[in-house]
Image (cartoon, rainbow, N blue to C red):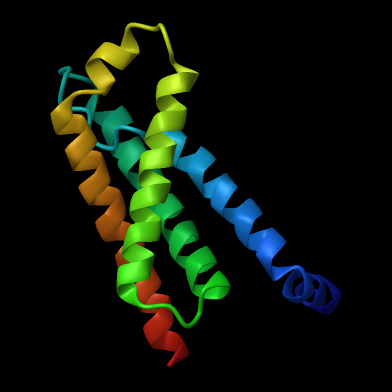
Length: 132
């Protein structure tokens, strides 16, 4: 385990980029966190919300480890970029499918951005406060 931590510290930028790409792919999977366009199944919605909470925890961990000395404003814009990139990836993943017409509504987009931003910032702040 010590060798892995040493390797990660040496290649911190590479693991930071890979971690952020991984998080964008995970964010792609949970869009939209709250799908209000269809009268969908509550079980799927709850599963998606629980998954979004887990992904936000991963985001907070990776950001706290990769960027220990940045401000909350920098993390806010980083999370906003990650969330938007995840939605773009989801759009192209399902390009041409009918699901894009009811997933990509203004209400779903705004709710997804707000939920993912709030959760990611909460977990980042929690880890940052523990480190201080």
